[in-house]
Image (cartoon, rainbow over all chains, first blue to last red; front, side, top):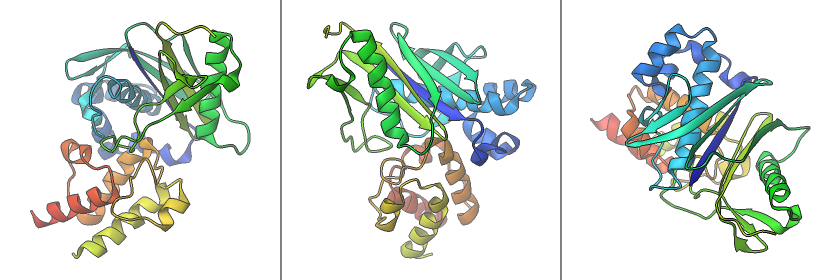
Length: 200
Length: 83
């Protein structure tokens, strides 16, 4: 059981021309992906859909193996975006493009029952907003008050960003769930895959 | 190029991508690029490309794979520049 998700704000000016820069594209896409990119009508969307799928796959892989570093070429997205390959692992994938963003969810095991992305309103802490979205979704699924859930991340020196994957606690006890958080630009996103969760 | 200069140049490259100005104010060799400086992972490719251009080097996937801290990036540049 492992889930990862990633959202990319397609309206962010910082990525407006990335798809037009061959060196950028070559850094992100594998040879097979570049061949599909060449034929793609919406090149910007294609590039960032691949990127989001790879990022989401990275987050899922990091839950089952020592976290890989930043190596987009080690992740290859299938032509129909239904899976992402990392070494000998083939992870399931779904990519949703709407409302000016790309949201990718990648998982091992059962399909995540909770996943979503939404545009933030006003000036808020995106990281906190993503955690709140996740907790709201989980609380509704578990039938417990949102305030009884907490999202924690442990420090992991070997990880790229210095932290391990997020985990959820219910009333201070670890919840049997794999969760993932993401935010970019004006969007926050989450995904959750529950195991044999304790009921609230 | 001395390590201090490489460090300054790497920090200058990172600056526009940093989402945590407080961490940038006390940046050091051990500062993590994603975790502490909160550089968005989607911008990492731009960071790598700018480092390649600034130091006239090529950074492979395997090399980028090992960069977590500012110091890792500095050491990578120093090693590539010597090669």
